[in-house]
Length: 266
Length: 250
Image 1 (cartoon, each protein chain N blue to C red):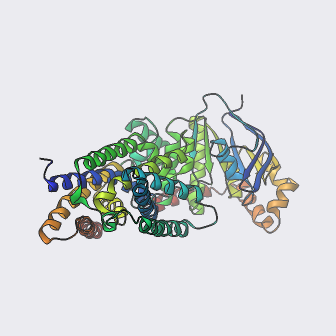
Image 2 (cartoon, each protein chain N blue to C red; image 1 turned 180 degrees about the vertical axis):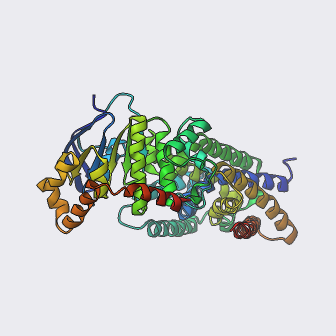
């Protein structure tokens, strides 16, 4: 069954959706959307380095994403506003990555595959990495769920409850790096943030609790992956962007429904 | 033994030393209020007590096994985060639904259990935070300007609730307040802080201390006198105010 490339692509998409859902909720709740963007964009530099040193792209992307995320965390609150800092880092990381890739004269690389993903070329090994990474992210976040939520609400409340919110932030940072690394193949570095934010935002109007929001986001992400791939197959469109388009349409539908029911309630 | 003993505490925040050689202790069951101008290190002191910042010098000793309830200054819940009052209260505590209901009752807001946090009024929100802090039956409550954003009747009602809580549960209370008139009526002891402890004692003693007057006297001298005047007499106002704010909260 896994020999069919469409089956593998679908499973890869669902895997990424499941990892991105709970993490995406925190990205939305903590207003870290740009943070996700910066981390994802830095991954292209990781891809270039991996190709240079002939190591696993997954490892390279994850290492650079992690360094990026830690740098942002370290620099936060030291002189520049967060969005300025992230704007500088996100786009310079992307630019440096693109320049670095151009130095790789000996290697022929398809840049588009890393910028927008190449989900139809997902191999058995890729699938294992994607599901392994997704399982790791879900396990990490599930393990620290209550602490992460408390730290998201209020730092002092976290300290008063006896744990360090900075350490919880590190859990999110690590999860983000892993998610970016596994999602490169599926949606590419430019659209990873979309997979984080759009399903979570779409789930908001349907959810009554933090947990249900994460679960609904996973379902919306998975539906987007399946329907997006189907659409890409039918209309012969690029797969990664098609998945994001479906997610965006779902977001629009649910938001409209949410507004409607709110107005009716008033 | 004192619940909290702060000995010769100095604290640095960035390049600034915000606290210098602070000494204080909190005894079981007393209500202590810290007053001081902006930037005087009030919040830093509270953060140091809960372990959010490590001191530059000095020591903070907590009674062994001390249970702290903390009510933050302001808790911003992003509108994208759906969470009910019950879920919020059970977030860091292993408690039953009945415990939550009881704590809400104590905090003066029963029946909010199933409501979304984002739909609460300012007064209700602060009381839910209070309930969340009370749920583990703390030995001491720490309140960091817990009435910020409430109007005067609202905060008066809130502090009345605090006194009720102390009476009913016997827990000590250490709070930061800007509202001098509240300080004058509700505290057993006032600590006037401005980087160091300027003066401390009963509200009446502190109010007449020259250090306190130097900080709050000029300009607010008249207003302060008015506040004291307000509470020396008994106009039976507080009762009405409490009722008003309850209505406003509905």
